[in-house]
Image (cartoon, rainbow, N blue to C red):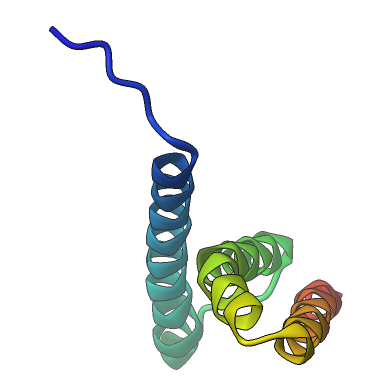
Length: 99
């Protein structure tokens, strides 16, 4: 048996895959909860749902940030600056959406 080691790139891709899966799962549940349960008069507000939405937003950010950064870095300094501004705006809106 060979003793293979994972490279940094493989580990990053696995992390991105996990983040994408968590985002998909939470988005599906939250869309269901936000759209269907109010129709049958079930209250979907509360801290639990707010925390799940924040986790979904963070997982979405982590799932897309690596690919977006690679793209920005390949296109120059201006694109990298735009990338960091977009990340800051996304994080701020995700956190402020919690309150």
